[in-house]
Image 1 (cartoon, each protein chain N blue to C red):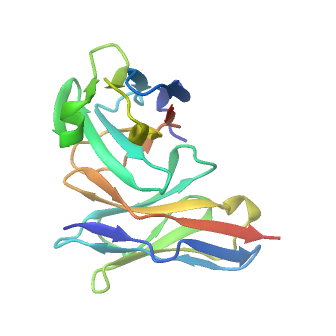
Image 2 (cartoon, one colour; image 1 turned 60 degrees about the horizontal axis):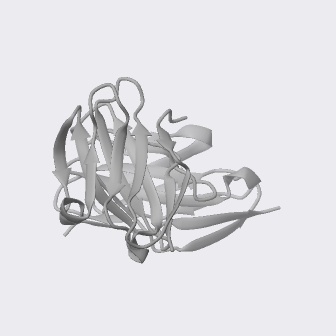
Image 3 (tube, each protein chain N blue to C red; image 1 turned 30 degrees about the horizontal axis):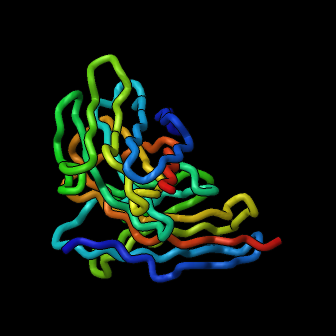
Length: 111
Length: 114
């Protein structure tokens, strides 16, 4: 069965530090992959997407993600985090047009 | 930023009561999705539409849940007889494509069933 796993429930980093949030998917093919961010239990905002081609994709606000077929992963990165990046981040895979979400990683950026 | 509109933002119902929420998709997005997000951040796909037609739905949606996307009116999701376990954030999303493209989410309707 298809699934998305985010192994880190909580991540804390200092402002200005680099960031990596991990995501792995389980699916026999290569799904479309997405990262969303959710502030204060509001709606989800799309950060970036991967369909095919260059495994490194750029998103909004300096975020990027790298797809690895061999590792079935789609990790999110940012070179320098800001306090406003504190939120919950969800990785998602689109399979037969339905989004399957990971359980989320709560990011806290300390001053 | 997404232009999906969801109303109401908050909904409080007693057990057994009907709960109805609405969604206006982004202009030009013919595909509409409903998801349920519980307090443990578990998401459940409920149903999706392309224009007015149901594309996919899960079993739960076929029983106490009903949904529609009439022409020239907001889409709606209704729970006929609310249960405590229905308390969740209900998210509406819209998409240009019914083939796996990105989905844009509204702010959600937070349902509390007392």
